[in-house]
Image (cartoon, rainbow over all chains, first blue to last red):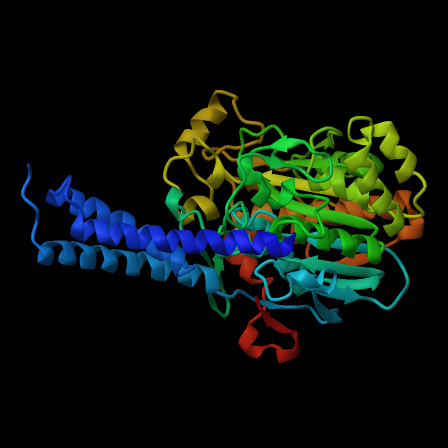
Length: 57
Length: 446
């Protein structure tokens, strides 16, 4: 049970990393909502994922 | 269609926000890794770790130091918990103060200043809470953390959709799986928070703890503020202590632990602090039979035990976590002045005595000490309440359960309040010791 908990815990961090990469890709390569406001929104959201992946917050 | 912005702009935006992230991240990192110092009293005998009672906690942020003060004279034993909810910092400071000043004549005392250490590695910065508070002492400024209510998600994540309490099966709010005071009596192979509770239960059962005191703070609109909450077995000592305190020292209430509100220390520690083999039987009975709905079924098992712990939870007032409070800053934490809470007090919406204008006058004790005027809810007053509240229930235990006699001394309500009335929170510093000038064997960082 503890191991299962740990696996799920780690999986969530991996998922966070994947979403983070996805958001960075979208910041540079997206074709819709291409305005500068969305650049800021993407960049801002990415930070929260980076802080979680680095186990800071 | 809007024109795509150039790559350099995107990179610049990301870089600028990364700098902001670095600044914020630095604070989060600092809060997680900051260590508080404690200089334990000469009565100290050993430091143990919670993982000694549940090895799966070793190396995790759930493992926490417990300081043991053993007189060597057979007698009663006490376990004192601070920091069950680290966003109630007077609980941890009171535990540190006890650890720094206690002397034990008879019996044994265990002090865990930060029961949920993981929750103390995370502040509530999203609520604009400050990360630290500071106390002036004769040896300089001391810094303490203001933690969170729940276990850090870095250590226990994700939360479930519904938290199903073990072993009762009662459904609780999802985030309460990280709430140390909703996971009692714990689960040996459960989540981190459940394992922390279970490890403390193992300590209580294996060391046959006679009295368990769990420190908390509460918002002033919460009816249980300034209150002892006592398990059935400890109701008499809590009521006697409450009457004594309310008459001679400070406003205090007492109430019985509800039988059907599950996961709280005052209920589960009382029920599960029985002989280890009976505890296993009780876990199974709750999990697989109707015992979870019928307390008399549980009692049949509990009453077979050769020993049961007296359990008391104590709440003191903390304006800082009051929902109607205005700006939550270090002053609110340390002094507790807030105009919105005062308005609530004027409208008689509070369950604690609170007055920032004239102050609340404390009763006079039989020895003539007392009569202090307390404005707001200063830290020294809240710490003094916890320390005296503990002494009082132990005194009552000695009276009603003489076979559990535990003789301890440390600065009480009057000692702290007399100094506090003159010097404010600086008085706390008079009861703390300089780590740089103390015996290194008695200095710990945690």
